[in-house]
Length: 72
Image 1 (cartoon, rainbow, N blue to C red):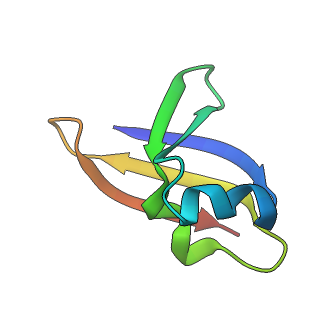
Image 2 (cartoon, rainbow, N blue to C red):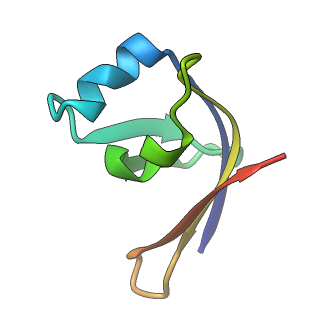
Image 3 (cartoon, rainbow, N blue to C red):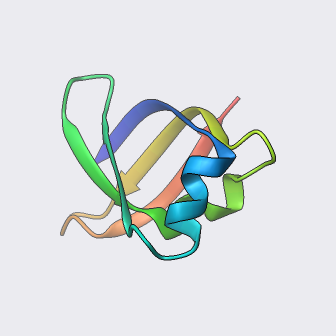
């Protein structure tokens, strides 16, 4: 399964995820499906501006995480 979504989380807000106070990010993909993604998958994309941009989430046939890619 593949999901596309746009996200903006400020550096300050994401710090609660980064420090383990929250463990997942809730969002809605471009098709209106509600997703809850483990925050650890966003860590490589964190900058001083936070996390922002268009992303693609891929899950395997069992619904387990496969990859998260930032689209240019």
